[in-house]
Image (cartoon, rainbow, N blue to C red):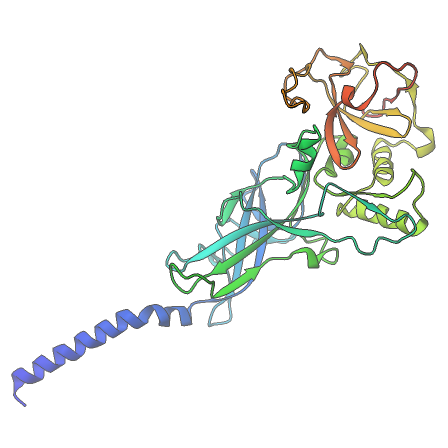
Length: 380
């Protein structure tokens, strides 16, 4: 073979090898890429600079960010974490090494789906003589949330439209929410089915992983804290008249309320009184009228209790009179406009009837009845 032919075929062979390398390299690269193993949700409270796979308790109004995390193992046996979090920690531990964090590769298609893990409805009844062994949480796909690795955090129950239809403020700025993320990885852009799916802890991890489950509790300060934390949870009560729950059911309701997996009025009231340092049999009830005489901040405070019969509410804040009701007859929306600075029927309370809700006192109590309303000033 002549020298010219040898050069020609050498060039051809190199060109074929180059094309083959370009075609096969993505497959080879994926084979040697770190292998995903597990997913987590990490919560970054504004100003902390660290996203933690852990429960977070902060004051209402504190912004936070949810970060998806996908752990992977390299061929050398090292663990890395795909995430957009600026820093990552598990529980109360120190942040993982910065070099172990990296963004998900742009050339590998992936979809991030966000879920909340919560009760099935705002309210549920349980047989009074049963231990409530069948209470189940639900994983709700939040299709209205961004399909992104990092999203602004929300404490927003999936079923709050039920309460909104009943005239409650569905956008309470506090409550408890648990989160799950599912990450779908696709073999190529445009593929219909994912090649692999990875999910963080869900309903089956509770209550066993309660102490580590990614949870946000946004609470009002002071005595009103326990009263505000249960928003977003399912209220569970015994079927039948008040006080009809058997011993097993009462114990279960106390446990669910303490764990913030659900709540019930009686154990919640016990927590509120404990936060105020008041014994159950020593609540300082006194007659009161909603006549605009008691000033907010001097006599009346958030966390005070109002009662008529067995209906007990927690005072929230002073509020302006409601606007004219809509033509369809539904209650007017609650606004942030301040009131006249004195306790009256326009003011807002935290109410617990068929679900936790913010309501006007005039929507809860009959203000025309005399001598029926009692006030316990425990919030100051």
